[in-house]
Amino acid sequence: MAVAESHKELRFTRAGQAAGFWMAASVLVVIAIFFVAVGSYRDQITKLPHPAWGLIPLGLAVLLVRFAIRCTRHAYLILSPIGVEVFPLFRPENGMQLVAWAQIDSAEIDADRLTLHYNPEKTAGLHLSLAPIARPQRELLAKAIRGRFPEINDRPG
Image (cartoon, rainbow, N blue to C red; front, side, top):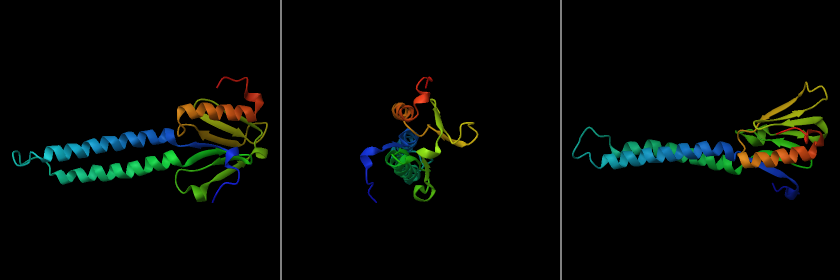
């Protein structure tokens, strides 16, 4: 389904979370290469593992690469004219949560968390971790939230 006015929304992906999966996949590829390299000496030292054992870390690396691509490409938060859309990691089409701007009384943002308050007493709301978002994009998110809620412009963030 195409978004009617995609130019009016800001998308924040899980690129910060994907970096760990990319690193783990690269380590597993190195382990797989090690099994293949060591396996070529099996005719001299029979106790070395068979090169086929390298398929296990290689298969895991493929899964991690797919997961990293998914985290990099799919949205975690979308700021749209309607409100803030929050997408879970698994089954985002079923678990997506929309918080309309009219529901949000105020917001707080710091280096690690975005808090959307539903009432002036700040007793109800939503806490969102910013860990999945890459660090440079967190500054853009903070700027967008501060633009929507001018009362937090004075606070350090």
